[in-house]
Length: 217
Image 1 (tube, rainbow, N blue to C red):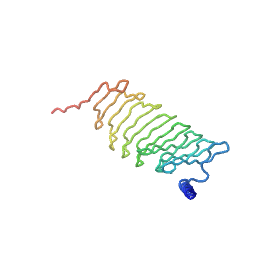
Image 2 (tube, rainbow, N blue to C red):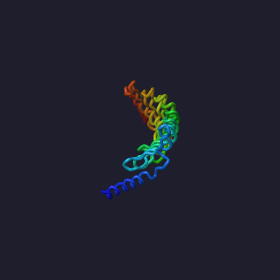
Image 3 (cartoon, rainbow, N blue to C red):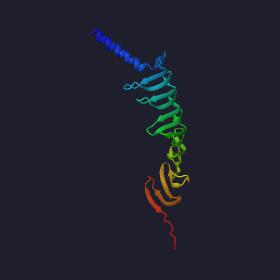
């Protein structure tokens, strides 16, 4: 019985050494007021890989914190000031990487979304936590697909859509008022071929097809 108990104790101690060997000895500390301080590391229970690397001052997250999936891949990098998002925000998605900046808890400035090849898929301008200014989407070859304008989080003005060509050929132009479609004009080889008008819900109410002029012999 004594031998079995000793063997079990040794085994638990050995496993604990492996699991926590990579954690620095000065991590996961509590200050004199009982609050987290310095670097705190937590791990995934199933894989023992690191899940969180967070920095604390007086019990609040401060500085660049990193978060990992169970396989050990970095999925988020977030800068905090007193538990509030402030600075870099980088998130891995199934499609690529989403990078933005937060000021006092609200997204501010340019947000860029990259695909898995690190090519830009989209970029958007923000102010005080809301989309404000130009927004673009891009084809995989880097050519511009669309351009929109936002005011206080709502699409306003004309959204332009371009063909995937070097000529920046217009495919459509859709007018918006506070996120609601008003009219869309469709082009073919740069020429207007169809106009659609919408009601207050954004549903099509009228269509006008522009017929080509026939050539007379």
